[in-house]
Length: 400
Ligand SMILES: Cc1cc2nc3c(=O)[nH]c(=O)nc-3n(C[C@H](O)[C@H](O)[C@H](O)COP(=O)(O)OP(=O)(O)OC[C@H]3O[C@@H](n4cnc5c(N)ncnc54)[C@H](O)[C@@H]3O)c2cc1C
Image (tube, rainbow, N blue to C red; front, side, top):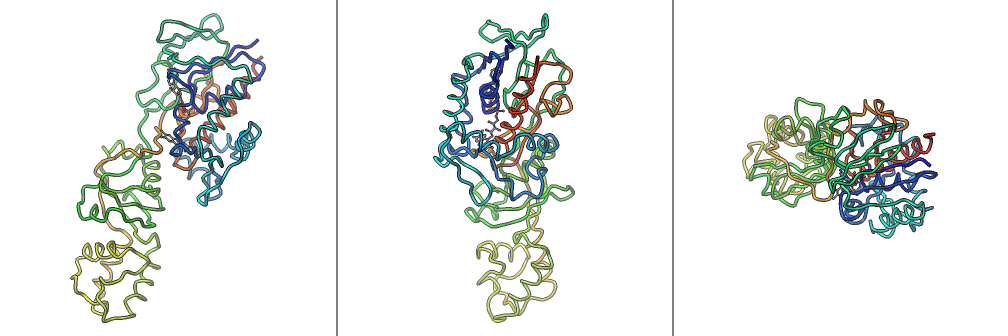
């Protein structure tokens, strides 16, 4: 009987192990228990996948690995994921308006327990406290050396060790191309006391890094350290490598209205032409919070006591510029506590995208975050783990 060693009992490793039939499957986990990260996903609720209906294309969700994911999603889609977990006993799912899908129980442990049950019923052997340190091929079989001095042999190895910010020493001797890991999904530190004084405000905004094609839009939250919210997380993901290479020091342009300039001009004109005697700063146009509007007026260099009817063409142009392209500066990054992934990992050029098998080492497969695939928040990272693990498990079962 084929023997399979799965290294890493996370989402990808356990899902693959639960799907492999007709083989002896041993899962080796460095930690004390399996799926420790899966248990805390989505703030303990597990954002298991996404409906994908708010995306224009898969590229929008996967800044790295979109090509492979388009293929993998055809083989194992979000619907297939929900079907699989439903058949395995999960009692329903809820899809939130933004497309994020959670188990109806709102409990990540239901997903962990379901995978554990499926592994047990499939006869999978789980070995915790087994940190794989070496991987070599000898006499047609794979030999795995563990930190405790023990070793194991297997006909096929599936490596699902997750994101490895400092690389994977385990792969050292195999000469597999590796893309340097850098963080993704972080918030921006902004050392501007005036902006930070607006702490707590939430607006729908568009962000851009001038001089690049990196853009995002969505909710923007002003915090006591700078900027956060979905628009920032998305931009941090799209620009992860660029920001890393620039020491997390970059210009930022904020469109506070998330509207094209012509629409902002039209709405501002309409606002100015009614109640021309009113102070400009006493109420805000475009549905902006009043504190933010007053901040924009001061950035535009306008007097606090200026009336709507007194604003000349230069003042109007300065206001529009601050509304649609307000300059800010990213001075550093901070972690987003709820979801953190690395971008980088095993170079996808080294992988056969239909099997997840390493092109240069037959019998060695990869799935999950160890690959150079990562996504914006919203359940897309776990979907990558499910889809790639599914492909790997199918291919492993086809080994003669
Ligand atoms: C706090 C948090 C919340 C998140 N929430 C969500 C969410 O709601 N939705 C979503 O889509 N994504 C979420 N993510 C991302 C998601 O958790 C990951 O993309 C996903 O867990 C990747 O699965 P994986 O199996 O590839 O890696 P992991 O889940 O990281 O599993 C890898 C496993 O391998 C083990 N391992 C590592 N090295 C070795 C070794 N040498 N030998 C043996 N074992 C080893 C590790 O201990 C670990 O158990 C979140 C991430 C974090 C940190």
